[in-house]
Image (tube, rainbow, N blue to C red; front, side, top):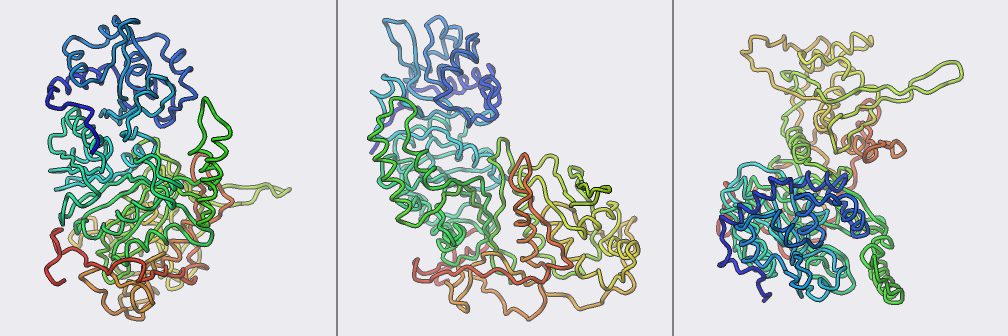
Length: 631
């Protein structure tokens, strides 16, 4: 058991919270630190730039400069500067918590731990870098992980809402459990390290998270069979040849802990719950990392969204995790690098992908669970609302009972999009090259290349007309029959809804401004179409040789009807032209032309081997309660 660093019984909680208030008043926040150090993002702090930070950015030694120097960059301050920075009560708290170390000969102080800001909240961790002799001499055996980029990315993508209970696995400093406590009745954090639990409890006290509890244990074991509305995890995920750093290394494949978290997730996620995991996943050529993750779910009836934040070749990844900035011993470095590369290549890994995974129960029966991947640059600000909109739109599309349900839908266009036409020279003038939609405030796929049909529909949306009226307008302007356009335009609107290009709001039957909802002449009066989406990467059931779905609501028999929302269209929308790249974000995506590409073959379902994992377990009963006996 790790030795506790903080004696929590000696620390005055009110005094600790006042200390946090003093620091925030100085500007010691995520934005304040970022601006003072001239960083695009606080995750960009690096040891090689310490001389620049300390001798240029912080040279004025203002109170905020001193706080950053002392608590984040492992610098020293004089006794006089410490008194300028903190009053007597604050210094008393720092002494009781053993946060500061005094050098009596030099009459200076330095911090034993680091303090990271996340938004307005503050979190103590062990030091990230051991570049000073006094730090090297006191590196703990089981250090508490600093707040790296992965911690900030998960904080910026967490889907927050008022909930009953949240669970933070591999809690470390407790950052995600403390933040979740702000919108939960109670939050539970679990970590295998007693030192980490000690830090997390102090951080809960510092941030007044009175409803956050942190316990020592192995993943789900301390919570028994309890189900949670929000499950968060930032597990050890680095594919290291040997275990060296507890909070970092996830075994030779990197998945030792991650796999266990995902495999047991169906037993601990409430019916309407959300689980999110930030991680790295190694990927083999010809096998998507999404296939590996889907297998770990053992056929659970869960939807999965992956926000891909970047990737590294295995050699570059190995270099990143073995090199040292200063005091390099080449022979030792060369040996470790070869060991890491050999470990990764022996498992046929080609790249390592950084990703935020989001899981929810699939309540869109009888549809199979879907898997979707989107790309974004690592978020430098909160993007949870954008991710929530995408997931909600995906689920809403699959719940629409028929294409005819769009008859009463009023079409709108969001205020933050721009429709651009790009033209190229021909020698005698210019011709249209393509069309593009730009989201002015989006982080996920902020630019989309679109095909002519999508452009034609967007240009005829006036934020008042219903779907049939927009289609009739297009038919009139182009001289085509409504019957030829109706079905494909309706399907295109569903794709556009999912990607945020349009909004669809149902018009109440008794609304004073309800438009004429009679379908335009010539539109096909087909019977309602049963929704049978072809979900990319959906886990298959026993009929196709896959693992049984872990659900207490088995899908009904699928009628042989045309799908309402074609997942192939959605996939082409997401994966479009690879040679068109946004200058400020991930590659632009392409909206497939429903006229020519709607009926393309669906992607092959993921093969899920039933003997790779234990027997399936059922989906939770209503209200997130454990399943009934014998289920």
